[in-house]
Length: 227
Image: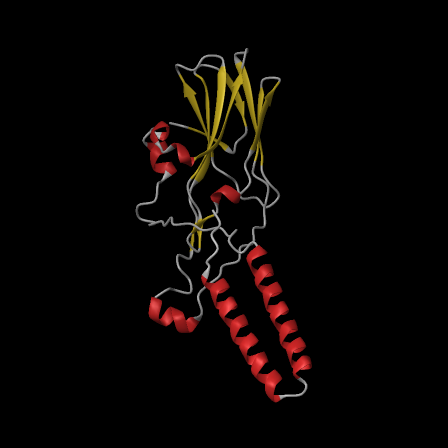
Protein backbone atom coordinates (compact mmCIF):
# COMPACT_ATOMS: atom_id res chain seq x y z
CA UNK A 1 0.00 0.00 0.00
CA UNK A 2 1.29 3.44 -0.92
CA UNK A 3 0.58 6.42 1.30
CA UNK A 4 1.59 10.02 0.62
CA UNK A 5 2.02 12.43 3.48
CA UNK A 6 0.24 15.76 3.10
CA UNK A 7 2.84 17.58 5.18
CA UNK A 8 5.24 18.22 2.24
CA UNK A 9 2.32 19.58 0.19
CA UNK A 10 1.26 21.93 2.99
CA UNK A 11 4.83 23.14 3.42
CA UNK A 12 5.10 23.69 -0.31
CA UNK A 13 1.89 25.75 -0.38
CA UNK A 14 3.12 27.83 2.55
CA UNK A 15 6.43 28.37 0.79
CA UNK A 16 4.65 29.44 -2.40
CA UNK A 17 2.54 31.87 -0.42
CA UNK A 18 5.63 33.38 1.19
CA UNK A 19 7.29 33.72 -2.21
CA UNK A 20 4.21 35.41 -3.63
CA UNK A 21 4.10 37.96 -0.80
CA UNK A 22 7.82 38.50 -1.13
CA UNK A 23 7.47 39.11 -4.89
CA UNK A 24 4.76 41.70 -4.23
CA UNK A 25 7.05 43.45 -1.80
CA UNK A 26 9.94 43.42 -4.26
CA UNK A 27 7.69 44.65 -7.05
CA UNK A 28 6.80 47.72 -5.06
CA UNK A 29 10.34 48.71 -4.22
CA UNK A 30 11.97 47.69 -7.46
CA UNK A 31 11.22 49.00 -10.92
CA UNK A 32 12.30 45.63 -12.27
CA UNK A 33 9.51 43.90 -10.40
CA UNK A 34 8.30 42.06 -13.47
CA UNK A 35 11.65 40.39 -13.98
CA UNK A 36 11.82 39.41 -10.32
CA UNK A 37 8.31 38.01 -10.50
CA UNK A 38 9.15 35.94 -13.56
CA UNK A 39 12.25 34.61 -11.84
CA UNK A 40 10.35 33.65 -8.70
CA UNK A 41 7.53 32.10 -10.75
CA UNK A 42 10.04 29.97 -12.63
CA UNK A 43 11.60 28.89 -9.36
CA UNK A 44 8.18 27.91 -7.97
CA UNK A 45 7.41 25.91 -11.11
CA UNK A 46 10.68 24.02 -10.72
CA UNK A 47 9.83 23.23 -7.09
CA UNK A 48 6.36 21.99 -8.04
CA UNK A 49 7.79 19.80 -10.81
CA UNK A 50 10.47 18.40 -8.50
CA UNK A 51 7.82 17.57 -5.89
CA UNK A 52 5.68 15.76 -8.48
CA UNK A 53 8.68 13.74 -9.68
CA UNK A 54 9.57 12.84 -6.08
CA UNK A 55 6.15 11.32 -5.41
CA UNK A 56 6.19 9.42 -8.71
CA UNK A 57 9.51 7.72 -7.96
CA UNK A 58 9.11 4.09 -6.71
CA UNK A 59 10.89 4.80 -3.43
CA UNK A 60 8.44 2.66 -1.47
CA UNK A 61 9.11 -0.49 -3.50
CA UNK A 62 11.98 -1.66 -1.35
CA UNK A 63 12.28 -5.03 0.33
CA UNK A 64 11.31 -4.65 3.97
CA UNK A 65 11.37 -7.45 6.51
CA UNK A 66 10.34 -7.54 10.15
CA UNK A 67 11.83 -11.01 10.50
CA UNK A 68 14.84 -11.76 12.63
CA UNK A 69 16.81 -14.90 13.31
CA UNK A 70 18.61 -16.28 16.31
CA UNK A 71 21.26 -18.81 15.19
CA UNK A 72 20.77 -20.76 18.42
CA UNK A 73 17.03 -21.24 17.82
CA UNK A 74 16.95 -21.28 14.00
CA UNK A 75 15.16 -24.29 12.47
CA UNK A 76 17.66 -27.06 11.70
CA UNK A 77 16.62 -29.21 8.75
CA UNK A 78 19.36 -31.73 9.47
CA UNK A 79 18.15 -32.12 13.06
CA UNK A 80 14.71 -33.05 11.73
CA UNK A 81 16.31 -35.32 9.14
CA UNK A 82 18.19 -37.25 11.82
CA UNK A 83 15.02 -37.59 13.90
CA UNK A 84 13.02 -38.59 10.79
CA UNK A 85 10.62 -35.70 11.43
CA UNK A 86 10.99 -33.69 8.22
CA UNK A 87 7.27 -34.09 7.67
CA UNK A 88 6.72 -32.02 10.82
CA UNK A 89 8.67 -28.92 9.76
CA UNK A 90 6.83 -25.75 8.92
CA UNK A 91 5.46 -25.81 5.37
CA UNK A 92 7.08 -22.41 4.72
CA UNK A 93 10.45 -24.24 4.64
CA UNK A 94 9.37 -26.20 1.55
CA UNK A 95 10.48 -24.15 -1.47
CA UNK A 96 9.20 -26.66 -4.02
CA UNK A 97 8.08 -30.28 -4.30
CA UNK A 98 7.80 -32.74 -7.20
CA UNK A 99 5.86 -35.98 -7.62
CA UNK A 100 6.27 -38.51 -10.44
CA UNK A 101 4.58 -41.80 -11.31
CA UNK A 102 6.82 -44.83 -11.74
CA UNK A 103 5.74 -48.15 -13.27
CA UNK A 104 8.97 -50.09 -12.85
CA UNK A 105 10.86 -51.89 -10.10
CA UNK A 106 14.07 -50.09 -11.11
CA UNK A 107 15.05 -46.45 -10.65
CA UNK A 108 18.12 -44.46 -11.58
CA UNK A 109 18.91 -41.21 -9.78
CA UNK A 110 21.46 -38.92 -11.41
CA UNK A 111 22.83 -35.70 -10.00
CA UNK A 112 24.45 -32.79 -11.86
CA UNK A 113 26.22 -30.13 -9.81
CA UNK A 114 26.47 -26.49 -10.81
CA UNK A 115 29.61 -24.87 -12.22
CA UNK A 116 30.82 -23.52 -8.88
CA UNK A 117 30.68 -26.83 -7.05
CA UNK A 118 28.56 -25.91 -4.02
CA UNK A 119 26.53 -29.09 -3.58
CA UNK A 120 23.08 -29.08 -2.05
CA UNK A 121 22.89 -32.20 0.17
CA UNK A 122 20.59 -34.89 -1.27
CA UNK A 123 19.02 -37.62 0.85
CA UNK A 124 17.06 -40.62 -0.39
CA UNK A 125 14.56 -42.44 1.78
CA UNK A 126 12.93 -45.78 0.92
CA UNK A 127 9.35 -45.57 2.18
CA UNK A 128 7.17 -48.58 2.84
CA UNK A 129 3.77 -46.99 2.19
CA UNK A 130 4.71 -45.21 -1.05
CA UNK A 131 3.43 -47.10 -4.10
CA UNK A 132 4.42 -46.33 -7.70
CA UNK A 133 5.42 -42.79 -6.77
CA UNK A 134 8.67 -40.85 -6.55
CA UNK A 135 8.66 -37.67 -4.52
CA UNK A 136 11.30 -34.94 -4.25
CA UNK A 137 11.17 -32.00 -1.83
CA UNK A 138 13.51 -29.02 -1.68
CA UNK A 139 13.72 -27.72 1.87
CA UNK A 140 15.29 -24.34 2.60
CA UNK A 141 15.36 -22.41 5.86
CA UNK A 142 15.73 -18.60 5.89
CA UNK A 143 18.96 -16.88 4.87
CA UNK A 144 19.27 -13.35 6.21
CA UNK A 145 21.30 -10.43 4.88
CA UNK A 146 21.00 -7.23 6.93
CA UNK A 147 17.81 -8.55 8.52
CA UNK A 148 16.14 -9.35 5.17
CA UNK A 149 15.24 -12.95 4.26
CA UNK A 150 16.74 -13.44 0.78
CA UNK A 151 16.09 -17.19 0.47
CA UNK A 152 13.13 -16.67 -1.85
CA UNK A 153 15.36 -14.82 -4.31
CA UNK A 154 17.75 -17.75 -4.78
CA UNK A 155 17.43 -20.27 -7.62
CA UNK A 156 15.64 -23.59 -7.31
CA UNK A 157 17.01 -27.01 -8.29
CA UNK A 158 15.77 -28.49 -11.55
CA UNK A 159 14.27 -31.98 -11.09
CA UNK A 160 12.61 -34.08 -13.80
CA UNK A 161 11.75 -37.71 -14.42
CA UNK A 162 11.72 -39.81 -17.61
CA UNK A 163 12.62 -43.35 -18.69
CA UNK A 164 12.78 -44.49 -15.04
CA UNK A 165 15.49 -41.91 -14.35
CA UNK A 166 15.24 -39.08 -11.83
CA UNK A 167 17.53 -36.24 -12.84
CA UNK A 168 18.54 -33.59 -10.31
CA UNK A 169 20.36 -30.44 -11.32
CA UNK A 170 21.63 -28.12 -8.65
CA UNK A 171 20.39 -24.53 -8.45
CA UNK A 172 22.24 -22.28 -10.87
CA UNK A 173 24.71 -19.73 -9.55
CA UNK A 174 23.16 -16.33 -9.00
CA UNK A 175 24.77 -12.99 -8.24
CA UNK A 176 22.29 -11.10 -6.06
CA UNK A 177 22.79 -7.41 -5.35
CA UNK A 178 21.02 -5.56 -2.55
CA UNK A 179 21.07 -1.91 -1.55
CA UNK A 180 20.24 -0.88 2.00
CA UNK A 181 19.30 2.63 3.10
CA UNK A 182 20.25 3.84 6.55
CA UNK A 183 19.34 6.90 8.57
CA UNK A 184 22.01 9.60 8.67
CA UNK A 185 24.62 9.24 11.41
CA UNK A 186 23.54 12.32 13.46
CA UNK A 187 20.02 10.87 13.70
CA UNK A 188 21.21 7.31 14.46
CA UNK A 189 23.03 8.65 17.55
CA UNK A 190 19.64 9.40 19.11
CA UNK A 191 17.51 6.56 17.68
CA UNK A 192 20.01 3.79 18.45
CA UNK A 193 19.74 2.36 14.93
CA UNK A 194 22.76 0.28 13.97
CA UNK A 195 24.65 0.70 10.72
CA UNK A 196 24.77 -3.09 10.33
CA UNK A 197 21.69 -4.68 11.83
CA UNK A 198 21.79 -8.45 11.53
CA UNK A 199 24.83 -9.18 9.38
CA UNK A 200 24.68 -12.46 7.48
CA UNK A 201 23.08 -15.78 8.43
CA UNK A 202 22.95 -18.74 6.03
CA UNK A 203 20.17 -21.24 6.62
CA UNK A 204 20.02 -24.96 5.80
CA UNK A 205 18.95 -26.47 2.50
CA UNK A 206 18.57 -30.04 1.29
CA UNK A 207 16.79 -32.18 -1.27
CA UNK A 208 14.78 -35.05 0.19
CA UNK A 209 13.75 -37.91 -2.13
CA UNK A 210 11.16 -40.54 -1.22
CA UNK A 211 10.97 -43.79 -3.25
CA UNK A 212 9.05 -47.05 -2.76
CA UNK A 213 10.70 -49.57 -0.48
CA UNK A 214 12.30 -52.53 -2.24
CA UNK A 215 12.86 -50.77 -5.56
CA UNK A 216 16.13 -51.55 -7.36
CA UNK A 217 18.25 -48.39 -7.19
CA UNK A 218 21.14 -47.10 -9.27
CA UNK A 219 22.22 -43.78 -7.77
CA UNK A 220 25.16 -41.40 -8.02
CA UNK A 221 27.65 -41.26 -5.16
CA UNK A 222 26.63 -37.72 -4.16
CA UNK A 223 23.26 -39.03 -2.97
CA UNK A 224 22.99 -40.16 0.65
CA UNK A 225 20.70 -42.81 2.07
CA UNK A 226 18.55 -41.98 5.08
CA UNK A 227 19.37 -44.48 7.82
